[in-house]
Length: 54
Image 1: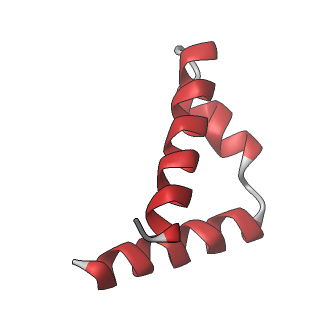
Image 2: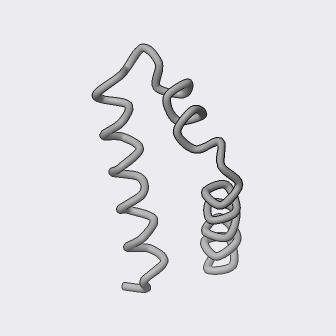
Image 3: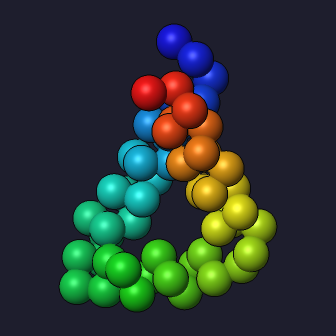
């Protein structure tokens, strides 16, 4: 299993965990926590990597 897939699952689990803790504000919580540019860059890179593997 490629490392990017494992990292993807970890992030997905992490996001789901945040959503379960705070269902009403799931997207708000994510937006507040991850407004920083580094995180969005990381997600973009991850998205590109997963698209390239298809």
